[in-house]
Length: 270
Ligand SMILES: [Zn+2]
Image 1 (cartoon, rainbow, N blue to C red):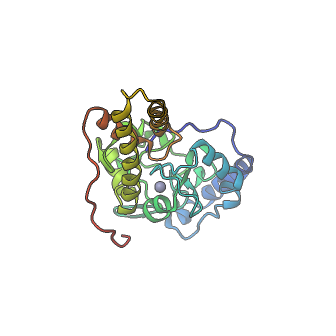
Image 2: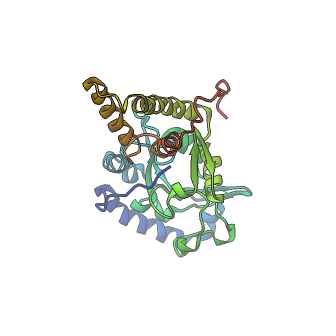
Image 3: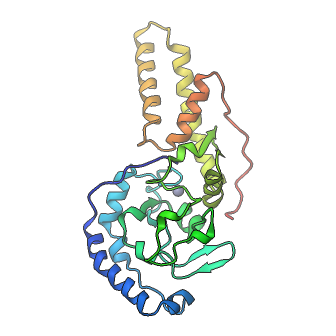
């Protein structure tokens, strides 16, 4: 997971969300008990937050990568517009909290682009905090007093300070890193296999450079140049698995390699 920079320009459909949000806030103030009990739910409109314009902009800001796992997955499946703070109810260790962060449903700052595995199957409506008592329960609350355990691809501290990689395996450096790896299953078998495959390719490129860098034949010089360019591109924010790639190449530069590992066979999805 890495930090992305969100476009300043807010997609047009979210501007419509300002009016819709004001109506939702007024509805909550008229019947707070019913919304808190979950007997009335907000009609959060994907025609506002999930439009092609919103998705296209987020996708561009994230170089077509999932904001959580850094996979480029859209050849096989469409991505989601993900709400960092859940727009509906929030599932906690002790049950569901209604009505969720309804007032951030159309907030550009609360949105990212994510793969279905991270968003729909793992994160869902979870949003753990260091201190549950500090949770913002309605639009009169201040989210700034919350200390989220889930890392945000767009704000807060840099995810790279919280999660590092050894080969294809993510390691938590902080409680936030631990919670994020666990919640999103960033060590799920399918993802680790993809990462391993990618890192193995980088290992081969690194090896080519090491073996040929003192070779003066023109074809060897050309091969080294191409390999170096590919290795440099692999750690750019636009590259898939760039965090794991950067950590792996640093290990290779130091003369160490954790690849290839013997992964267990794929398990059914949890
Ligand atoms: Zn993902």
